[in-house]
Image: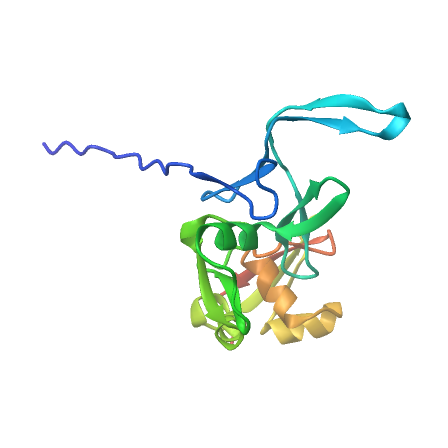
Length: 196
């Protein structure tokens, strides 16, 4: 009888001050942003001292088809909307040079861990985006979440024409690259083996 030990790999979270927001915000190698505890003078309503506890920022999502996580950072009266993956990369590796962009290696734009980010050219990033799931062509099944009625299309382009959306959006929904795998809140989208 063989006995196997399961090893749990736990990544150590490392925090660094965010450039331009030192002592106020930090970013971690696991893609999290936190606001540090601090006391500051709030000049509204006659002025008073505020105690701000340390907390992890939730942020929001930005993007038309593909959603990226962002946070809003404040320094005195200055507010800046920042993409989380860019904060992680620029504070742990380097600033993004002109003509380059940050790629999510696993294709999931919400996975902002440092080990999932790499620097690529815009053309390399676009070529990767053009590839459909794992480089294969697929057909697409749309299931109405209310009636379970199904529509099947030979390609993302055919489905895009039917629903009056972009073909890339269809592909992204099917691989959960968007925040939801539902089209127009009504259809569940799945990539299936190519139909001839």
